[in-house]
Length: 449
Image 1 (cartoon, rainbow, N blue to C red):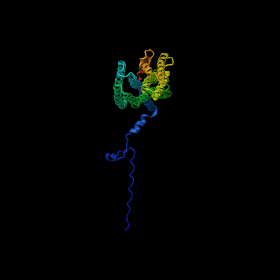
Image 2: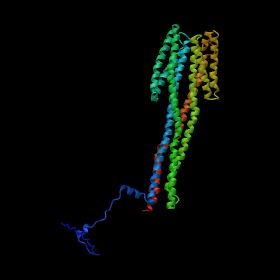
Image 3: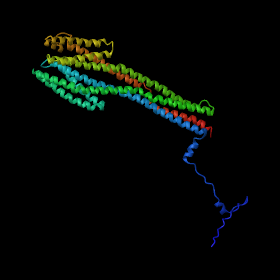
């Protein structure tokens, strides 16, 4: 059976021009579909053409202005913080060195008083007690000032309890004329030298490193300020040049004013930070180094004085103590050379004591032990005895150290106070520059509306 194929539908002829279609057919006619622009398309059109490029430059220059403000603030905060921390760490270092000085001073008193026999001189005993109390107070202050030092300071306190106990045993036996007292004295000295002072030296080293780190950090403020300022000025220059070429106006006053704000902040801030860094270097090379040298000289001097007495206590078997004296005396001389070349008075005071020490050693070596002891404890009748000459050096070096440490604190304060307040003005200045850019660019954008 043959299938009949259906004929394709006949094409509907288009109505002649001017024919009005029925309403139902008109509604069925295909209509073009309108698509709303997407977000990306809208953003692209916002940056199209000259107005769009103006908007792009506005955003770039304003953003760089704010970034510059943040960099300036960070740079000054870096330098100001380093100056503050250098001041605090320097004070802590002086505090730790004062602990060291008081301990070796007390030990020098204890060993020298032991030579007297029986009851030691009241003034010397009072000096020993005062030095130990001062050391205990400074340990508490240091633990409060620097939490990082607390653990070591706690360990130091424990060793000092042992040291003081041995000293009291030495005194008690010495008053009774028992030879074992000298052994207690040597044991106390060993505890101080082997247990206590290594902890103090570790604290000194840690705080010296902190001070050095902060002194180095003072100069790093410009590493934030100068690159941020220069990069921002480059963006401003490119923006102004592009505007001049497109608008044929050679100067946009608000944007140029924003560039001036950035330029002045960079120049004034850079000079101030460089000046603070230079001042810090001068302080480090003068007052700070002088403070360190004086502290070390005083510590070594007291150590030498202790070993002078211990050599006599050993009565002919004190070669190790005599060698320790020579090492400490050499350190005093080295540190005094660093203090100030023309500080003749301080050097002469130490030399006066060193000359008396030579007489003490000569008497001891010549079999005149009693004469050596009398010269060492100040009973020789001569004004130039060990006690008088050492006390003169002690007082003079103490005055010098107090002046030097005070100078460090005052000079660091001056360096910090000399900085302009860009640390907290940096961000507002950056915002001002950004607003000036927006104002200047909006004037040109108005011309395209």
